[in-house]
Length: 130
Image (tube, rainbow, N blue to C red):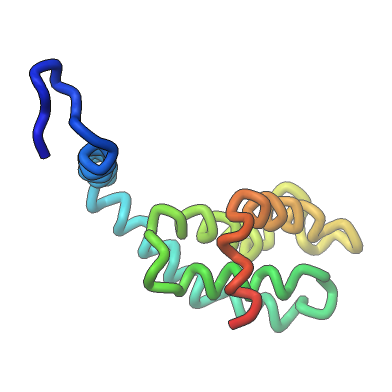
């Protein structure tokens, strides 16, 4: 990678490589370890909750697609952190609207899952088919 006299990079590939290096510098090993810990929590608790309440919710297929996205080795862990956060919110029974509230207990969970689906958009389509 060569900088010109102004400190600028010569082409878009050099800019991308420089930015990619900077992105890795801002994430510490502690951040990545925290992600791994939260991912393990999701893996240990997600299916128990889906089995318990799967018939009560209409977004079980979305949960399954998000989990497949989470376990795909080709997806960067930076993208997966968004999914981990949403799935933890879904798993934990104490949230904005407690899951024990009849009928409305899963509305906030649906809102969080829907927001993540909207954010990830077309990236998730293949995970519905796997």
